[in-house]
Image (cartoon, rainbow, N blue to C red; front, top):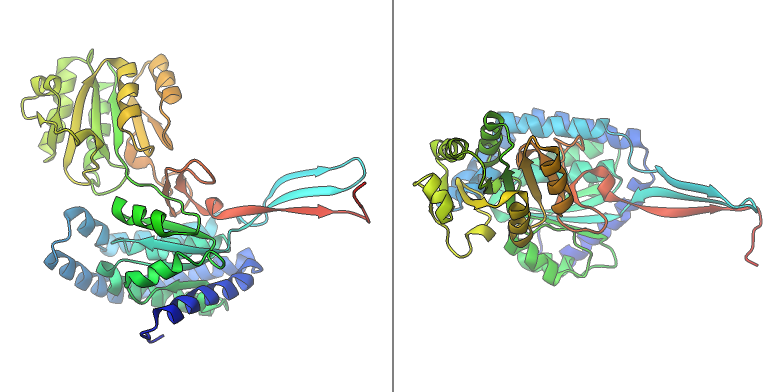
Length: 422
């Protein structure tokens, strides 16, 4: 549609269209929704030259505007990443139907049948920055779970999102589903977003993906329930019992493989009883990959290139080739540090000792806890959820990587034969 100056009208249209389409989508079959998803995967690959061209213009403008390296990385699409986006849509289509699952069933002595069944949440408002792939992830996961979605991306990815929106509309049309099942907002005007966040009568859930500033602003303004995670200050603790060779591989992967993501390691904790050779090897391995290290006096003594950590260092999500280091007194020291500085996202322990593993698993209260594995594995795709809606550090409804099941709620179905309450 062509934007009018009246944002209230546009906000009302988005919400009303989504609510109407939700009734149709809620009653659609899994086969129909899967058809739309497979159509979408094909449309993405067919439109690859258009999408990549639009994305190249977004990236060029973002660089000219001084966007951070982490944001540029999240914004950038290439043929490999685009194929991965299409593949994730096909994977979502192959997942079991999350709607209509029998969660609980019982029959009373008087014959009354009570069943709890999974159903779509309703209308989801997806708000995100930089990552244009979220346009597809959000649309696909919501379609699979029977939810309509309003997708509001950042201004830095508007061309990419517009190209993806055309693919979504074509896929829905071919599956004979309403185009309003997935609407991409056509303006980055924040005043429109403020209006949508107040519409708790028609919108059911808000999922913001982006920086802490965006998420806090959404939480403060929204009248609608919000699923969120503010930061991913992720820790890796290397115990004295760790396999040195595997620890080096995991630590480097956790920080370097893609540093601009929320599941990248930000702080490395080293057991004070760890051999000096292993500690030096870990820090040298990070430095060799261009990682700038900040730490305490003990870590500097171990590896002189470690710079003094500032007062807020251990609470910082760098999202770039920077990391903190601290020498701690065994697993208990690691747990104390994590309790003080973790954001509830992902923490990892590298240890052969079953006792250390058990203590770490019991003591860490984060959404994902890894044993001898990289924090970078904390991801919906890696967990077999297909693409992910996001990673929630909340405790109610959804926690950790969110897949299609996290986008359902439930209803009670009560079947009687003339039953009345006595």
